[in-house]
Image (cartoon, rainbow over the protein chains, first blue to last red):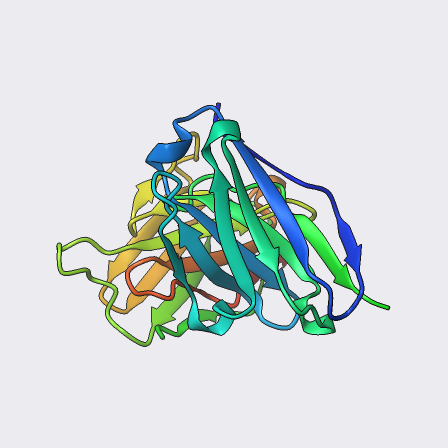
Length: 114
Length: 112
């Protein structure tokens, strides 16, 4: 069974960075791109970018290219997304999503507040 | 970017009715390989979106045949026949033809 298990909710201060994880199981991790998606009340759903776990190659939505950094650890089948210079506009639920947008993680709630 | 416009925003239905949701793209979603990458999702309260339909009209594993997708080019429709209480939630379309991939704004299916 394909599962994407994300890290827990985060409360961080403005200006800080945060790293969210997504541990994959039930399939060949390096065989499928991993996407990241933002869901906020303001802009609903937005695609942030994707990473090829096999070679680490990334592709970003231009709106997030300076905000997000995607990495993977093949040894633990885990994908990561780091968000930088956080503001209140980054408060949202973030999802990792497998290649065909078929399987989604449970979401990680990020709250940016002082 | 391909802008995805979903209508209606809210769809009140009676249980047992048919529901129809539209998704229109600002660009054709037919890829140079001839495939059209348009998916439909249902997001129930407090849950992640769940895939219903991929590539316009293909039901994902375990999805009931009450759900059907159709369309081509820029205009797509999701139909739900004999709506049940478990179908309630927000429906989204997603295009995966053009980068950046983009979502519709969502349609909330609720009881009339």
